[in-house]
Image (cartoon, rainbow, N blue to C red; front, side, top):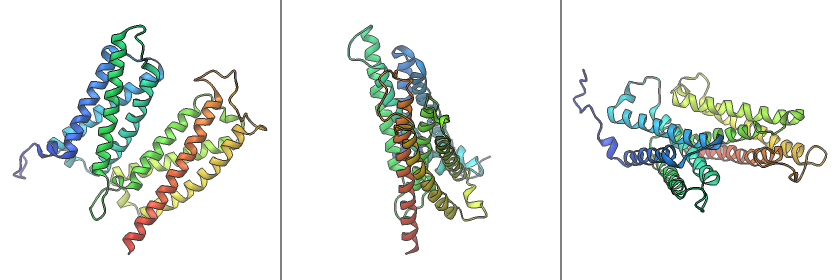
Length: 301
């Protein structure tokens, strides 16, 4: 029996700003993958990825809404609900952004060949996918940390950057798995080790915060994260120099794209993607360190 004296259902959670945004997420998410499965269609790995993203985000958002409505999250011991919802909102925004770019790029054409009805459905999917990304981005904006207010670590800029770093690393791994030829040199294998090490540690940091284990560690968690961020910056800095040299220098690779390289299965394209996102992740780790140091300086004053 519940002796709290309050209502069993937390209806207030649905009518808050974040609650309304999550209902819109369910609406756009359900509409998007329903249109795809009904008439718009999909094919190949790109289409499967988009459908997975929309289905996964819908399922997790539905779980969050049900838990907030019924207060089931209070039964989860050793679990930080605030960290989980903040991390998922950021991850869902990144995933839906990727899907909203990939689907129209590969499946939408302006002509009616072969079927105008299918084209219209695919255009509708693209619009709904874009709206779905926007509502997840709005949730990130609403739940982000604000000065002077208690918040979860994953809602801070440092926590959100951790999710983006892990997501960018997944893009790098996807490019590495597509004919990147990283096994040719020991130096490029070192770069893969850098990406793997930093990805694993970043995921561990996220999991420790979501499960509430970060506060129970014997070592100071904030100090560990700062030291790891410095190490990650140094490692990514080496990879940002080594990878382009061994992929695009005339001695080891090709500075220009080979003319007979087919789209979608070209090692040069994969190497370029890895190069771009290596530098993006390096900037993300630097921003993470700067924000963490600034936050520490402000709190000490």
